[in-house]
Amino acid sequence: MGKKDPSPKFFGLIGNLARVFAQRLNITVGILSAVFVVMAVHTFIWVQNGGKIPPLQKAPTPGQEQEETSETETTAGGQPTATSTPGPTSTPTPGPTSTPTPGPTSTPTPGPTSTPTPTPANIWEPWVPTPRPLAHGIQTYTVSGSKSGAPKATEITIDSLDPGVGGSQSVSANVIDMGAGPVTNVSVELITDNETTTHSLELTSGTNSDGTWEGTWTMEDSYDSTYQMEITAENASTDWTVTLSFR
Image 1 (cartoon, one colour):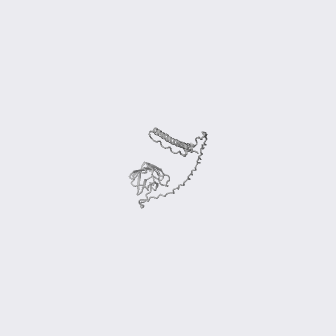
Image 2 (cartoon, helix red, strand yellow):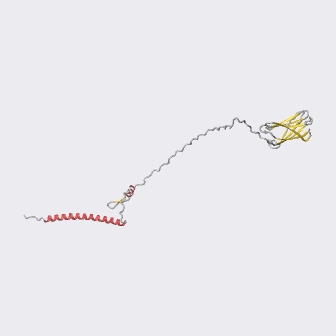
Image 3 (cartoon, helix red, strand yellow):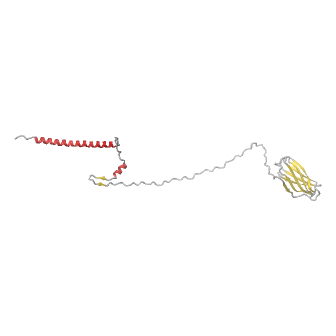
């Protein structure tokens, strides 16, 4: 038998290697083409941004992911699949909160405060009463009552009742004899704080049976605590006295 020709096996092997090399070469060319396309796209974006590299996009937040998932998704077959969108979640409304009302606070009532009595500057100083007020100007007094057998003054006029120390004072008295004989004398006894003085009146009008008797003098003493007048009418046998007390 003769030897077989090895050419078909050799050429078959060479063909297989060529196919493998072509496949590998196609893969490499594809990868290089993809890299070139990516570099071309980035270069275009870089030129459009004025030579600046655009910032990397941040990862979507959970809220954005929820919004994206709510969109319609497309399957591999090209048919859209409906994705359910979650409905709104109800937020509970807080109820009214009760605010405690403060109760009334008791305010203590202040007790009475005692006011101390001032001590006099000099406890040995004698107490001086306030003088009783007097009427001013001319004062007229009508006299009632009588004494048997004696004359009497029926009306007495004083001008002024409050002349002050050193002031002038006049007294006028209407005197009748009451049928017991003519009037012989009419006098005024003035009693003041520190002294007693007697002043005689003179008949200025009428008669000694029914006339007006008058007298004038100067007030020489104070009359803050004691002030009296005693008017006395006399006849030949007796007299009659009426007392006017002012203080």
